[in-house]
Image 1: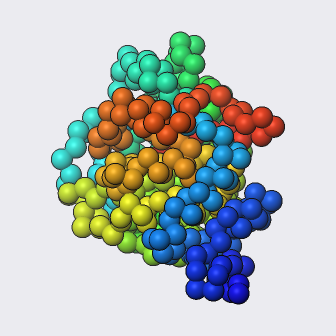
Image 2: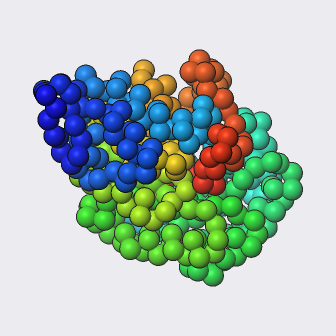
Length: 358
Ligand code: SF4
């Protein structure tokens, strides 16, 4: 006997495992994941995890094949941010022991690009800590981007905070391919993590980027005290926003930040969240971002079944594992690092991007 579960999910037999493959079939046929289905995924019993990942992998494989896209982050300006995002070690309310410096000189930004290219990254992400870029920072970024692109086969993603439409247009004009600006969590939970700007401020920046013709990279952070419904809301909101690329961070609670004591994540939950994001955003790039090594731990390789992208190297203020370990993991899985836009014959995934904090 088959019984109905939340939404239109079915279980087989009665009391048995949810039919995640049937859900994957419907997603592959164009079904838009519902809120109830999203909740069922993140609350799936641990015993169904491998079936769920296999179903998510079918969707990932249909759109991205066995490819993995690598991204390389450059923290171009660290600390000194006047905003109060509770998860962020660079905010004015953080006492975290991190490097604090103003915008790096052009030679350092070029050196980062060289490293990114050497590590087979598709995209070089230039990130500054700020509410938004000042004029000096805008000038520095718009001058260095054409130089980087002339020397290296890299896409450029800029993560500069809130942008005006005019600033977004200047970034597009100098050759920035995409902008990262994370929604970070659900609309309903947003004011729990930040009081100096709003969720709608962030959506306005996404709109400015869209209007300037750049690709949108926007994701969030899991593990800040939000509930499962907030996690699902974020996945569905990103679908509504039409973002091309979704970086998912798992909060690495940093001593000295307001969220230093947040610690509800385990590797299985993180994998369910990744599977839910894949099924909610089937053809969007999904990147495992900060917290990968800490929260997925010994299961981190399984994250690449729903996700198709990772950062190689360090995060903004925390260390990543050595690049060689990432390369070995990808090889062991039988996946292939690629910089290609089109990775599956007949399928054109959206153009791709990156990101992390902000
Ligand atoms: S996330 Fe960005 S805007 Fe918020 S405090 Fe950190 S650097 Fe500033």
